[in-house]
Image (cartoon, rainbow, N blue to C red):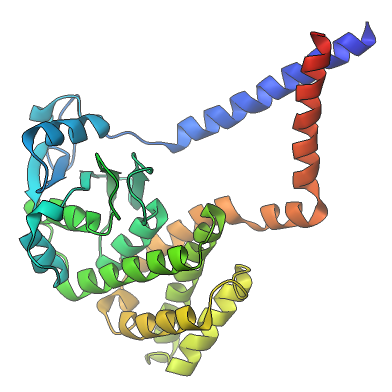
Length: 319
């Protein structure tokens, strides 16, 4: 009888833990409400890829959970927009597929959610967030979706256009350097075949480097030398346990990128510093020392084995 009670206790504990995880996940996700108009811009802005036909635009709107089209401002992102905002591209609108729903958020920060991760093949939500902060984007909720697999590299064009049509102009130099950042980090993650967890650590590396470069500029009123940038990058890679993962070639790509980055106004921006601090905290919650210590102590294996025992106990209970 006591054995049966123990088994039921295990089941109850497992259920409570599962509910805790589900509740936490639900709290993290923030939806953009398009059922009513109650928003700083008047309406959230739906920027759809100009390469989509009418039926595909409707399909994309459904993916973004747009309940009433009359409650969003809709505009397409064209190949010309890619040239205007980012300074490159052929102007071919047919290739513009990925789309975004952008909402001004008085709570602050830049929050990105990819609703179709299976169709955004190269860019992560944190990479979008990091690059958007570089460009000067602030106080927005961004949802990204695509009806079919695309790299996702042009999605920031939609974000910039959403800001533009709502009267918020960004510095073109920073938009271009943000795009370079997006491509560099995604290329490195894909070339090194990083896991999702390693890719998140790389995002932490990027934030760490930006903060250290801003600190040098603030303290000395000088830009970091190439040698200092290299040391900062290597220290950040060491800190996030990626020193032996990222190749020398890709370290050089980061050095070249950050030499350009620190010459933009992002290096002195208080808004960038604040949002990087918030992003660092969010990443810290996901990648903090607790996880590393847990791995080192074997706690993760203990948790895995615990749940394996629960499954086995449930099986035994009904046998």
